[in-house]
Structures are given as structure tokens and as C-alpha cells.
Length: 440
Image 1: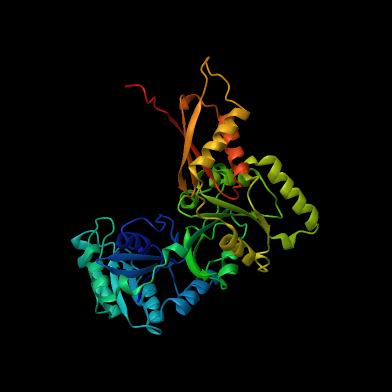
Image 2: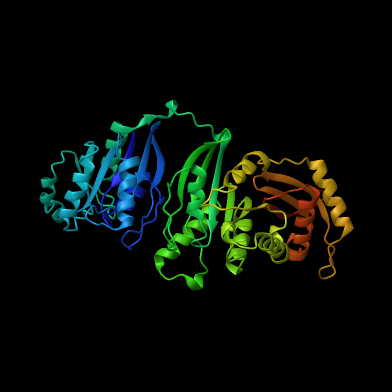
């Protein structure tokens, strides 16, 4: 059983979603309609699990394509056989819209609980008598601002609509988290929809349709792939409102939480300064990176464009020299599945290097090109160990870690990548002080 939060815009669905979840998983903003997609999260309590779904605000009285598409998707995929949490606002006088939403819901599912949100004080609560006209027996009063009614609502959900953890087979070893990033309107949502096989995420020619990091799970090649569609990342100087700042920040934060990061670049525009910034950001914050040039079907001289883009990557983004790239058409689904086949079959997730091999490499690389003297002090590299495999993290012990210059750090990193044939993965090298064993 899934619990679906449904209501008109700005009634506090996302705030309530976050409160039940116990963390800020969904975007909350003063802009009306800031939730533009469907966010699903699993929550657990006392060995019980609930799947909670937040939905965009709806208004059946509106006849524009956006609202009609949202209502159609909710009707098709979320209403049947699920528990509906119908959210209304105690501080908004729009009972006609609420009545219309309820009429729409009851045509499909009568398993409805009414949640009167934003009842921030007793007076507001007593003024909510008009909601009795909706004819729903199960009613909860909540206030996200003052945390009122949340505990009672949560207990109700877990007592009636949860399932045991023991009935779920969580094969974590075969789970891959994949984030899709890029500038606005490069085709991220179309790419994800193309992979999963249906229009799960909203698309359009207008930039900024996706405002949150929204995930979907799909089994592929015996792996459970959790793929995140994210909001476009703009240069700060081009961000026009605070909602876009929030959306962009959520995308950037998500980079650290996904194992494999896919950067989508529009082939018709080519590689620009912002693409380079995002590449650098993913390499610094993420683990694995693949570069995908989308919309190659819209390019006339494909061979020349491909050659120029590859040349540009190699010449202008030194961090991307060992990164795999693909040319695709997300709209026409050309070569999309090849990317995921490559991820499942070709990316080594747990590279473990022996300490002897690492120290042999360190001895050779530091001898081949020794570190320059710093204030008359000689930098000696004693030994190294591997700390982690995702991302590969190497700790090098040296006598003066704080004096190591950046160019030499890059030299070690590049040589390490070349020596051990590391591709598509970030490498972290940590320098630490080596203790003198005879100091005491």
C-alpha cells in the first residue's frame, strides 16, 4: 500500500511530506506550484515500511495542458488501490476547488483521509467546520510550522497502511544510484523517460520544468537502478529567482549522493563554460562520471561536430581525459540503453589495489620526478595505503604534507590514473604526516 498526498497548490503537501518523512527530501518554497513532479520515498518505523508519494498541486477546473497532464498521470498511476491523503489548507478559502478535486478522486478511489493543514492555532481549527461539507469521516488537523498533529498522523499511517520489512527483498549489493545532471533544457527528463520506457518525468521546451531531484527504480541487467532526474544547473549570474537557486542547490547536493553521475550536454550548442564547471563539480563531489552528448540527431555535419566536441573535451577539460562519452538522441531513444549496458558491464565498482603495488608505484613516480625543494626542505614520500574503493581514496604519508604544491598533486593523480588504468572515476589522494618511529 502506498500513501499518496493529493491537493491543490500551496496547501503544504511538500512540507507535510517532509515532516512525515523526518527530513527535507522535497523542495519547499513560497512559489506556488514549486513541486512539479512526483516524489516517492520509503519510510520505516518499528520494522514497518510505508511508501509515501508527494504530487504536484492540481486543479480540475484548469484546462491548460500542464494541469491536464498532471491529473491524467495521477489518475493512471497513483489513485487505484492506494491510500489517498487529501490535503486542504485551513487558511485558504477555496472549497470549490477542493470539492472538485474530491469529486475527481471519488470516481476512482474512496479510500480517502482528509488532512486539514495549516491549523496553526485553536481559532483556525474551530473555523474549519465548512470542510465537513466534503463528507469525509477520517480527519486529521496538522500544522507543519508548529509540528502539530504530525505524530498522530504518522501513527495512524503505520498502524493501518504499512508492511513488514521482512516481506521486502532488499538486494543492496545489486543497487546502483545514477544521477542525471546538466544545464536546463538539455534533455535530462527525456533521457530518463527514454531509459525507463514511459513518460514518468515531465518534459517540455520551456526550461525549469524539473525543480527537484526525483528518482525512479528500474530493474536492468539484474541490477536495481535508482535513477534521479534533476533540475538544470545554471550559472549563478543567470538565475532569475530563489526557486531556481533552491532547485540548482538540490541538484548539486545530489551529486555526492549518487554513485554514477551522467552529464548531459546539448550537441547543438556544444561544450561551453557552464558545462566545464559542472564537469569539474562532479569530479570534485562525485565518484563516477560519464559524459553524454544529446540531440545529435539535430546536427547536420555529425562527424565533424563529434570530432570537434571530443577535441574540445581533451584540450579544455584536463579532468575529463579518462572519461567515457556517448553521442545519443534521447528523443529517438538512440544509443540510450548502450549507456546503461556500459554502466552495468564495464564500470568496476570496487577496485582494490594491494599495498605492495601502491608503494611500488609511489617509489617509482616520486623518483622519476621528485618534488622541488620548499624553503630548502626536501619532501619525502614514505608509503601509501588505500582507504576506500568508491571513490578510490589513497593516503600518502610524507614528512611535510602541508608543503606539497598543487601541480605535484596533479602529477601524482594523473600518473596514478595512467598506471592503474582508472577510467570514469574520481581519485582522492590524501597527504598526511608520517611519524618518526624513533621520536620517543
